Amino acid sequence: MLLRGGRRAALLLAAAAGVADAGVLTRRDPDTAVYASASPPLRQALSAAAAEGLRSGARLFSPWLLPPPPHQGFPILNSFASASVSPADLRGQGSAGSSDDSRCCPGCLGRNSIAKAASAVGPAVVNISCMQDAHGWRLGESIGSGTIIDPDGTILTCAHVVADFQSTKAVVRGKVSVTLQDGREFEGVVLNADRHSDIAVVKIKSKTPLPAARLGSSSRLQPGDWVVALGCPLSLQNTVTAGIVSCVDRKSSDLGLGGLRREYLQTDCAINQGNSGGPLVNLDGEIIGVNVMKVRNADGLSFAVPIDSVIKIVDNFKRNGRVVRPWLGLKMLDLNPMIISQLKEKSSTFPDVRKGVLVPMVTPGSPAEQAGFRPGDVVVEFGGRPVESIKEIIDIMGDKVGVPFKVLVKRANNVTATLTVIPEEADASR
Image 1 (tube, rainbow, N blue to C red):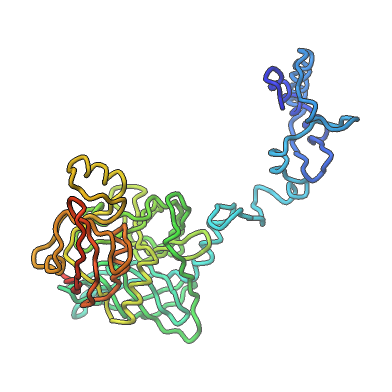
Image 2: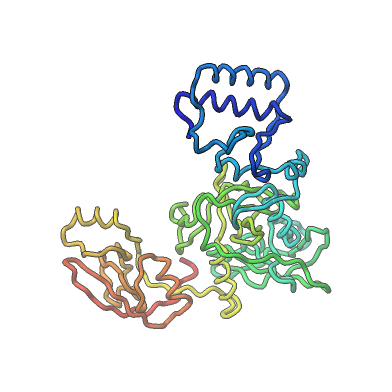
């Protein structure tokens, strides 16, 4: 190891040696050599500085680091050698780009990672416009984006791009025009649209198979992951922006949105008018979300519906022709150790639980009230399965309406109660 007194001189000496002889620091293993270059004046300055360090008499290296005699060059620590680049690799690199885009693992950012992700999905991204007219008068035009997810012409997009919602029924805005990246144009038909999730499915017909994007999974995302947004902002086709995931479970209540509970992916990708319905893509070129909105007058606050939620919505479209959402009539809160500790400080009667879902409020006349739920209950099991989050309860219910579920709750003073609740279908006007 380097001794403290000679560390500076050793580094200078190593640098001088490296740039003095054709820019090479030699080692017995040529595959792990480190290469450097410097101008003649810099070489001269480094050599002089290193020589001064040697004259000071500092011992630069411990004996076990020195190569066997005769010493040839200076030893290189393995941590540096393992990251070195051979001359052949250096010759293959240049400012114009590199064909080598190796990544240590899926999701890691390489030199061309964003470009490859965009090119994988780009051909399937479409521009969608809806012309609204009445008796020959043009009333307006809605623009957005979409993604072909099946070669038969099935397209994912946003409901607000293609439909208006009068009461609970979706009304198509007008003629739906779909333009592909290659310039082909088709007339689209809106198959389904869901107001609460803002997801819609459009279908186009083509004589030949269409380019389709792959669906990924949003469950493995974590804050800091790189993502790419594609779409047609302001009708500018083939627009690509990139950023990171800022939050994987942003609640609709955090955004001041009423109605049924939703969760979004929050990113800092640039999203503008016309991006709605376009895909949010991971570095593997898979769709992990559908871009739906941004915060007005704010930069870096964009939101997408997670693809796992979108897949469930599309499955509901296929089975029921609409999204069926069970309703219990409970206001719920996920518990964690910190919240539990605070609640115990406020009330010594709070039940002894490590996890669960707190019920702060029960809606009068709801299925939950009829089942016997009380404010302050902590749900620890739902449908015979332990639960610790609202999402787990929603996933267990799925689209089951009118089906009884056994629920285990804990109450003040550790009283346990087993309830049976029968969900109703949520009122779409809520």
